[in-house]
Image (tube, rainbow, N blue to C red; front, side):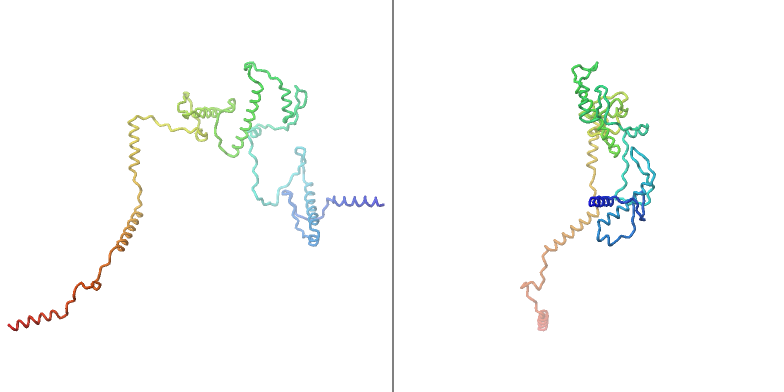
Length: 340
């Protein structure tokens, strides 16, 4: 009986973990945004007493309702995966950042889309008829199998018999890797609208006439004289935009050849134009400065000028004349005349 009781208790606990998918509850669900909004009131008692368990149960029920409606949508199979077709979104969710833009197509992807070329998924192993075994497409096992396969290389008919064909093959492979990396960087620069400097040809077999013309112009301007003494073909034209985007390939101004007398007159005209230029004078500032200097000069003169001495301040310079001096003289003269 004890064993049966333990088995029943264990099965009851396991049954509690896997609850039923049927949930009787009304909530708002937006399948286009995969959003579930529960506006029902919370149980405050259960929220205070058993917070974690109550929130976990509430979240589980709402998520179960959302998944129940997702399984009712029409489905389709894409690359061994079942995908549900979501309806149009009803609720607009706010975004902190803008919607990411789609990645721009590379040169090959654009060409394949125009020509209708569909890229098929390759397997990781390929069958080699020479070694009679499956070889991985990449990895150290691929390199080891390539060494076993190319243990001897045939010398071409017109090639140098003393040339190392193994080193030549390694160099060709490294050039191919560098070319692919260069093309990848070009695609990134093209997608970001970044101008890149021009340089020599990477593959003359597929280069256009414009690229050939640009390569010739850059090669001629790479000399010490910047192509001044390089000859030209009868109908050769220089590529446009080379001086603007090629560092160190700036063109010098081509001045017409002049004689000694013409050069002298040109230099004299330049000197005269420099000497004849007068500095610009601001009349208002000049007048204000002149008035200010005059006022300062007057104030200094007033400070240095001695004050004039008054008569009262002159001590013992002369005696005061008596008030009745004229009257005494008149009396004497008059008395004298009477005596006569």
